[in-house]
Image 1: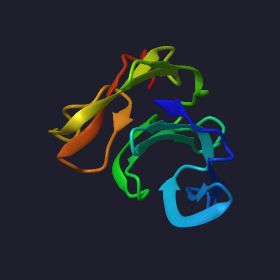
Image 2 (image 1 turned 120 degrees about the vertical axis):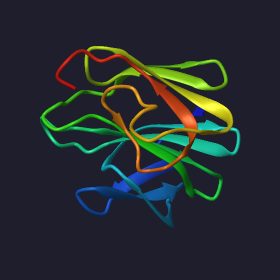
Image 3 (image 1 turned 60 degrees about the horizontal axis):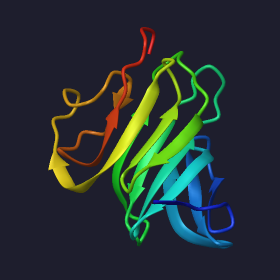
Length: 149
């Protein structure tokens, strides 16, 4: 896992909910949810992207796993109405794990899986984590936020 700086991977908001992806200074024509790029990690040929909405008192963290063509393989969101957090204190641990703080006064952990795994929407997620109605995942999110999330 390697952190990419803004000169290699960057985003620019195109609406209040989405941003365009840039490699170098080139617009790739691909968009992802979120307005502010917090962190981009290159893992093999894939990208793990952390984006926030930049909305006071309702900031959500969108985590995207993209393939080398910048197609979204998996996405999840941490947050809920009236909860907010600041993405901070991230730390890469080994070849497939990153930890960070966001909401709920807890440390969150994202583990990239070797192969996609079956999951049940709504049942298989930590409190405060949501995914679109899908039945597979390329990464797992662990966290136990305090009440109010």
